[in-house]
Length: 364
Ligand code: KG4
Ligand code: ZN
Image (tube, rainbow, N blue to C red; front, side):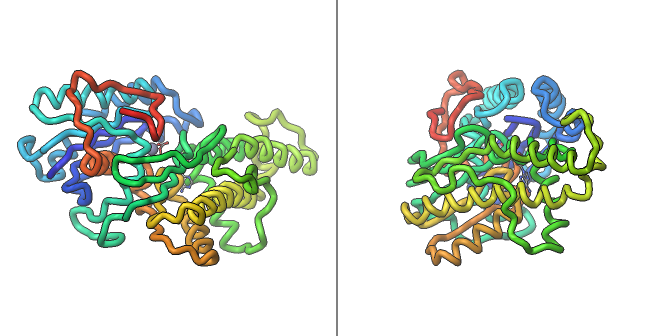
């Protein structure tokens, strides 16, 4: 079965054709991230405008790169939420129109649940990767993206229960906001990871500068908003020590602290990674799932993967731990199509609408 997936929840316009939920025949992504890098963050109206420009060429390329005719496509899957309303509407209205025009079933997809399905994709057109079988249930899944941090228990493709999540900022948001404080480019996650890697290549001392909120609490929740303030305070302290006063945060001369940026980036990354690993593994030891799945843009972080692997082996946890290859962690349409294959809630096109507030356990 071939499904055409369409994803437009934020600043990526993506379309993909996926066979039987596991094999990518094509995956095309147009991103307006470079445009947002100039302003240090996403301007929703600009992102939506770019979605309008990109959507038809992206869908057309996905079809042609997959070698499929319209008649080969069995159904269309589209992200209905959560996300930016203007961006979501472009994908949803395009998918509705194509479904009517091409007479195909239309499957609405929850973007957050779909992130998890990057773990179910096993092949591209030219290569095989990851394990030969799909993850087994029950699966504990940590979805860490730019706007969400959710820990859920998947008992089956259709039975998903809430375990925990962030009380304030998302993990990706913590990377993005603290990167801004360090004057590192948007998106902040890869910028912090790259800067931190420079420090980590030469230094092996423990990184304990920033707090690990809620890490010892008997729940599976996180809080990341305090990290921003802690980083801001640290920068201000360093500035005072250097004797240079500046109009922080927007105009301070980055050169004041520039040599310390890799260390600060490593400290920030370590604080975020530590709490994600500790709380998730506490849940895993209690719930004892068969699989532990990472998903979302932050799952592309190498340190996060490494520390999960290390902690799983230290704690002798018996769990099938999986992380998708980095390009499948960040937003794309392949996992949208995969999710629609494994958990198809086909609906009449007239009933499908964008829902920017959709929760990971919300009804579509
Ligand atoms: O899942 P995603 O592509 O989009 C959303 O659904 O939000 O996630 C984007 C988030 C951004 O906050 C970005 O900074 C973060 O993922 N991210 C990373 C890395 N790559 C992307 N965070 C840490 N390390 C990375 N390598
Ligand atoms: Zn996403």
